[in-house]
Image: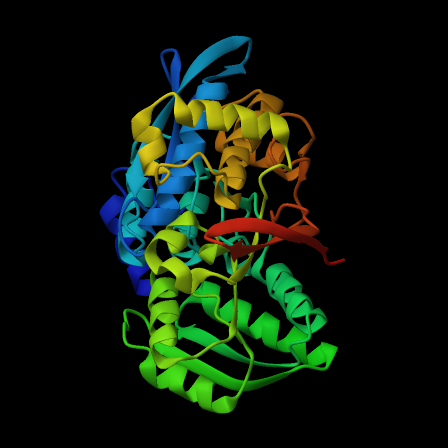
Length: 396
């Protein structure tokens, strides 16, 4: 959680750069430009526990910039330069990364993967009046009370309800849950799932918890085995997914694993092997949903061996790719709608945006909290070593 004294100290340290509590944006409609170039900040984890997810999102943002490398403001075309900052999946480093983007003079920010780092950085973007578009940061508190943070993905309450519906409708009336104490993403999802599951008539028989950076889960997995449940809801960060699956296999725990969007990664198939078969997770987008996007992104990946290597030597598309591509496109759309590089004007354009063309998961509009208006999630399952589409779930 952010503390008042930390914010105050950071403001003093950064006063000479951006002026905490005041706008760093120019009153000019082209105040964020340097000659013929503007900077868009990319706030993603290149390293740390969410580095794998960050790499997926960075690929999609790079592709979006390839598709739309310029923006027109005031009748002038500007080249878009991407300013990459690694938040290292760490809340303290996230603040430093945000401050660097602000001091670099970015006109907007795209990112990122992981709600905790986005919450930590959010007030700095707001104070500097720099609009940010979250990619897969699903915790409600990312945008709540922050006029300058928007997001392209759906929220944890939505996906928690979706997965509770899936579990109950597939005959799992008694389940266990696994919560990472202090992790906004995991705790938010577990709470929503638990509440929604109870409303449907289901029961959480065993509610297990663990602390961040734990790696030995044998005790909680033994408790789950002894409880007799046939399904486990474990919406943890990806880091813990293969550990849980592999250790469960070693203990002879045979259950239906149900997860959130962070488990939907081809890395899981690589890291957990056959132990990943059967895992069910929700995602923002399933390949085939937008053939034009799929075809273009795959062609771009296959043009460069290093891109494909970053994508685990596959051209498979996951939900994080799609929403990250969209987050970039939404920001560019808002800049052109505002016809300004001033942060406050771009923010107003985002708030009133109603756009339907050029997105993987579109159309896009935002509610009063800055959250994309979404009502659909894709459920996928690992079968024979591949993620395969299972169903589309809608919650009104």
